[in-house]
Length: 146
Image (tube, rainbow, N blue to C red; front, side, top):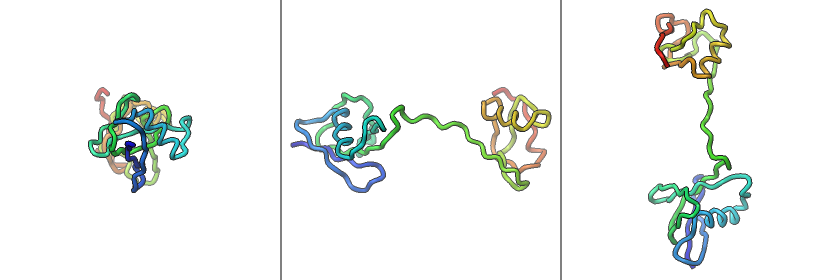
């Protein structure tokens, strides 16, 4: 009987999956781990990484040698999507709003605040660095292309 030791990245202890042969395919290892941990294949996928080499196994038909140790992470079925841009607007006078100056094609003084923020979120404007609110010498606009 051969085995592969696995642990979830948030756990301290390893568990063991046993199988016959010299190696196990990634697909079979995922099935056995999901069965042992009572996870549903419709809810999530498993990301398997070699614990010693930090190599991530991505091909379902790759062979994982017996007596290997792997780290398991649960991931959403569609994969991890990149996070969208998030902006927090603080209207207090002492708030820190950006870092040096906004680089934008529109003038925030002539554009309503909502439209200006939409331009930032859509990528038409980029806020660079941090600057305290009402520091006029550092908040001027630049006409640099994006």
